Length: 329
Image (cartoon, rainbow, N blue to C red; front, side):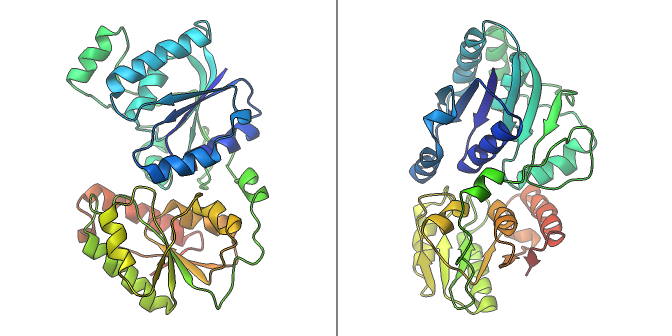
């Protein structure tokens, strides 16, 4: 039995690729309830019951109680025997690591949580560093449920990274996710057209990680740089306040996507002259799928973000993207 832990549409795309690449059978898909209706709709559009032996829905909140109950449920499903594989995104995720620490398994396979994988590789994986996620009172509750809290997590020798990103050869990297299933389902003909508008891929959590007015300035900068009308593809976490600010820009067509953008362009036959965004994972995946279109990553100054750690991540992503034919502006 294999367990897949999923928290976003892109993670589900990567999970399907992993299921095929590793030839996995008897698969449980555990999906976390999405924080926004838009994200939930995109995720639902990708879920096919025939792809999975069992689908379990996890609440987005009350993790300290819901995750232990889920651990108990999975143990019973497999009659207390170790799972073959646990496939999960986000190396530091508390929920995933609580499950990894308390359900026996032969191998853990990490898939992408987006460009955050680059940060996790550079800060932790390449040097096989340990980490800890103490939660205070929550850890006490976890222990009272006879479970081990997420503390002193050493690098696991049964760990494998299955990523769309290309990293140096490592003992824990055996395969690379080349998005084979996604590529087969996409029609690339007619997408690139020099006379078409540009695309701007929305950045997530604006208002929480950066000021809305600073974000608008970056979109303005991209518009002036490419001198095109822009089709704006919002991030699934985008707030109404951000939507209203962007919709007021006279050069913007606001496009509410039914699918993740990699599929949306093909499904809706949208043609574009170029694509831009800020640190978006989709800039990279689109560069893999549509190799003949110019793709721009808009760089940011240290004071753009509220948190210095997000700026640090942006520098990692910028450097990686530059080395993979994504243009920094």
